[in-house]
Image 1 (cartoon, rainbow, N blue to C red):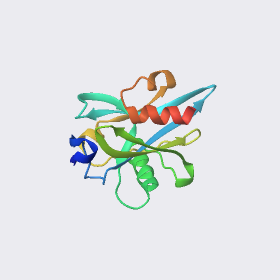
Image 2: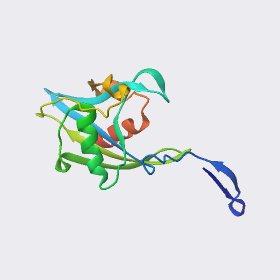
Image 3: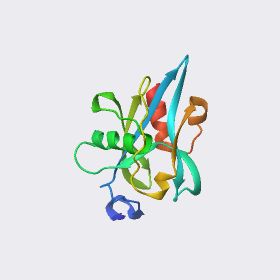
Image 4: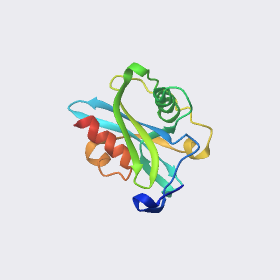
Length: 158
């Protein structure tokens, strides 16, 4: 998309707008306590815009209508195999993807300590079928290249 507003000195600002999800994405940062340590659940999957090799990133999904929290619940089951409820979600606010995109990310945390993992249902795509959910310590998650995941981690641990 392009914005022009000569009175404000804006003469062709170009940015990205995701139409598939009405410009809204949900990110869920699952975590659990193991002894004295906290681990975080991330995805290892091919993300074509980043790499054709598996990349570690957050559990995300696009807005499909209704409450965005319902998208978070669905993505957790599809991508990780964990069944959660709205009451399990910890709202962490929203953030933008970057200054060059108007996509709004709604961030949630969810404590999975004591939860049993079921089978990840997937969304029917080959990329998701070949993906895996893996537990990592804070020290590894904080250096992942997924900016929204790191924002959720910062807010969750602040």
